[in-house]
Image (cartoon, rainbow, N blue to C red; front, side, top):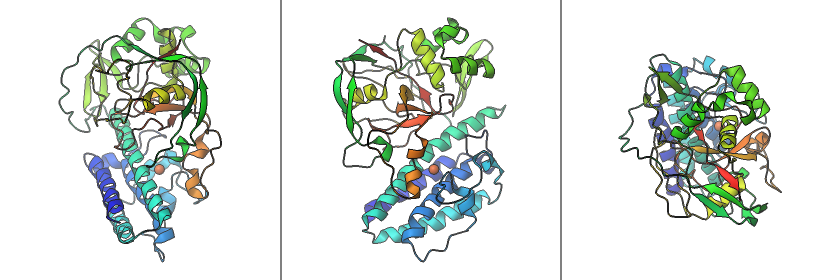
Amino acid sequence: MPAELDRFRTVRSHTEELAAPLSPEDQVVQSMPDCSPTKWHRAHTTWFFEEFVLSRWGAPYEPVDPRFRYLFNSYYEAVGPRQPRPRRGMISRPSVEEIAAYRQAVDDRVAELLEDADDPDLLATVELGCHHEQQHQELLLMDAKHLLWQNPYRPAYAERAGTGDHPTPKPVEWITHDGGLVEIGYDGEGFSFDNEGPRHKVHLQPFALADRLVTAGEWLDFIADDGYRRPELWLSDGWAHINAEGWDCPLYWDQVDGVWHVFSLSGLQPVDPAEPVVHISYYEADAFARWSGARLPLESEWEVIADGQGPPTPTFGLHPASAAPESQPGQAAQLFGAVWQWTASPYTPYPTFSPAAGAVGEYNGKFMVDQQVLRGSASITSDGHARASYRNFFPTKARWAFSGLRLARDV
Ligand SMILES: [Fe+2]
């Protein structure tokens, strides 16, 4: 099956390309309980193929190292006990070189298996493994950014490609929708995650969605207007949290000689007012929306507008581009390839959703509580993960993901 094999090899080698700028020392460190070391991402994505593909279809299969099942299982209860997530940074052994050898050994075995594979279950599981690894490619960059930012040197992961002009974004135009009975959820031919379906009907009130993202310049206005100091703008939990944490700006923002700077994967740079604001929590997005006289969109509102716009063409970047949107009238810009957009929708199962049987069923379903859905995709999101039905999700306080916002309002 050369097509599947090609895709597998492409995904696997791209992970290694993304890890390459990080030194062995960088790759071992864990900057906070939610982040994982680069080395762990490289090993865990390998373990996924070992556990869910080779142990089932590669029989008789001898694991590369039986201890890796404990070290590199993420959260699969059906697989067994595992290294606690906050202690992944303690795994100083095996070394980065040993993880590279682990990857190679598993790649060889999976490639062998794919040479003449025609079992649809096997091919579907390899495809899931590839999409899983692509999600971890984004996590690898998110987590590396958080790590590098902790270092007082503020080291860059890589130089930023030319950033071009920074035109001032035009005022928001509102894309209106009459509401009524609509359908959301994936029902296409290609790959999707289980949480994107089943497709189902939703009733919407008339609404309007902003045709572009909220910018860093608008966020500076929010700060200047005491947005972080006015309790009436905040949900109770959010107000308590920003005060407990001392938050008064997005994550990675800092004043240098009185000028706001932002840390990116390319190091510290002045905040560009034209770029989308990024690294804000749900609480901050919600407070900003209230300050603006607007609200956050429902995920169904976001999807209905995005679904009507044809296939996305996101571009990769270490930091969201400052492009002023050049959308056609009635079209939304920056839906994909800039920042994940917080929605007002809690992450819960769609009607009639049921997870797959077995350990793979733990992939999404068991996390469907106490988190909010984000839509779109970020500049660091892997190819093939930009689609209207994609549901990302994070806890309300999280802001190390590339999270921003787009406004909505009632009509
Ligand atoms: Fe994973």
